[in-house]
Image (cartoon, rainbow, N blue to C red; front, top):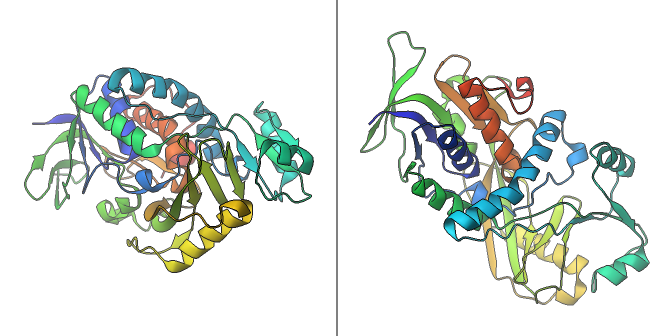
Length: 362
């Protein structure tokens, strides 16, 4: 059966694109090479902000605030429609050891984002057990988080309820072009044949395998970057906000679980967990909270992010008129997903773009 829109990739970007497409009135099919949402979207931490937003380029800074505002409403909608609580939580983020204090203050002030500098006395009062030095730390109370596996589960259930076709274990093996070579006429997996008016490639780090003809395009520098994370268990309330220092972070969940991440490894498509990353992440947790130094590691995992030149690609294919691309978000896939999906569908439908689109184009 021919669909209006076919989406390749069922991570958070693909699923959010599917939701936005369905809301626009389109019939939608989503394909994934394995289980939906089990790559970078599942492996990440769920922070709804770039780690250091003032250090990102203007393209990321434009999408981030719009996306962040959507998640509180999306969390409520998903709970109402699916019964799944994605645990959206405005817990705030504490920045330690900042080397760009002036840039941070300038950005936060320009965006009307409240912040507070905490001295050592205030830190000891608010963060019991935290190793405190003499440098003040920056608290941004408005930064939120969610449990990304729950988000993916809820999105999948909502899409199925809305009659979006979600097909897993569909590895695209063959493309058929129209007579002029300007459109993809059909796609073939191992056992199915697909046709659609519009195709969105949102396959994360695997997108170049589907689009080899533009792999040399300077704006399409998409490559795999491995990240490893650890999980610990404390008592609920022991750690109350996200804490970040030198690109490493702790993320406390409501039930006392604490995620510690993450490594950044230029690699191929392999998710081997390493002793080195395990040791370094455990040491980071122990450095921040010496009292938790003997806690056992509950889980250790790795994921593959779509690395890029710093700007995601949200664009029409430069040669195939019915193909669009949404990938290359690196560490920002989750926190930019609502805006990325909205901009993608704006481009497809000709609506007024939610943000100026030029920076994301190939």
